[in-house]
Length: 178
Image (cartoon, rainbow, N blue to C red; front, side, top):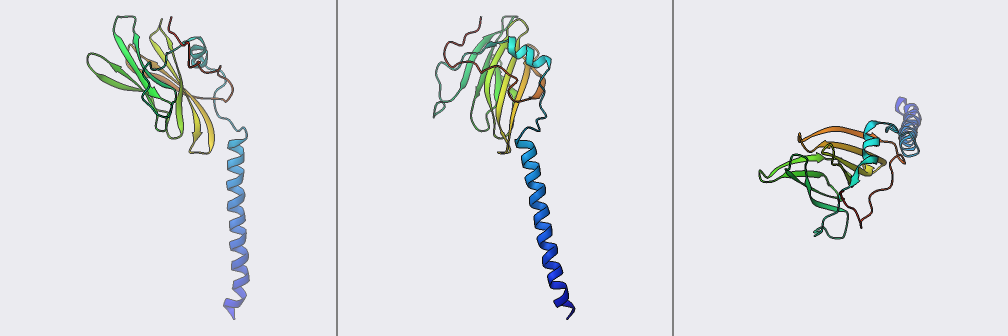
């Protein structure tokens, strides 16, 4: 008899619990997908990225199907060379290799589902800027900027950027370093 009286209560409680879980999940997804942006809209890294010049794409692309790809030699102010390596692919990251030591350092590793999409150089400061864009966790759009010091071989800044703040990405033809 007691179990008969508890049955409707337990069913109502289970239904209420499922409804609350669905509501919380929907609220979270909506807030993050529709403009609850946490990215920066003003920061010095944005200004520096805007002023930097495009790093040319690889002259001999190897990724198929075609995508943005870099395997580009840069000349540093002290005469050394650095090779920027990366591609706009899943698991994509940008590395810098320093011949003749063959030392390779990750300059930007944006994470799952966020891919490198633009690379620029401030040659006067030996600074590399990497823009990465994608769906974090496959759910929310995110844009990140990385600032890497080619001379001192280290990341200086990594910042999430508000959507729509950055200029258009470098075109796939005609990108040159002055």
